Length: 184
Image (cartoon, rainbow, N blue to C red):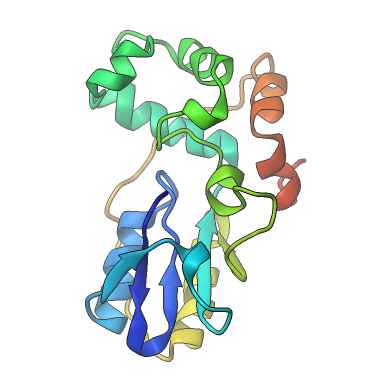
């Protein structure tokens, strides 16, 4: 079970998700709140905590994962054992991602709904969207009663939607699209 970042003195918990700007968000939170006090699964926290997460359009998240794992050559041994290769095209990558079971997926490509609602009920009380990062970061800063500019630590390239892949991505990440109203 993933451990989330907790600031006990403020009863605040951030549930980071890979490929959703979590490094930048964590850096910004530490600037505002100071170092987190501990890591703990958010599901174990009392109801009076402010638990939040940022989510991202699944297509863009796959582009980001492809960029890091394949294009930047950061595949792990486990990812290579699961058939991923540095020579994979984006189409190859998407097909490999969508051919597997989500519960066995790598943390970079597991569905966001599996991370945030593993038993069906959404754990964070507040969701922010990567696509509205500037606006949502300002809203979060208001809640936290502090501010710092959000540092963009990692940038992803743009890859246009490939129409033939759209149905299989939407099927694999259906709950992500449904939960956060991202279906076009």
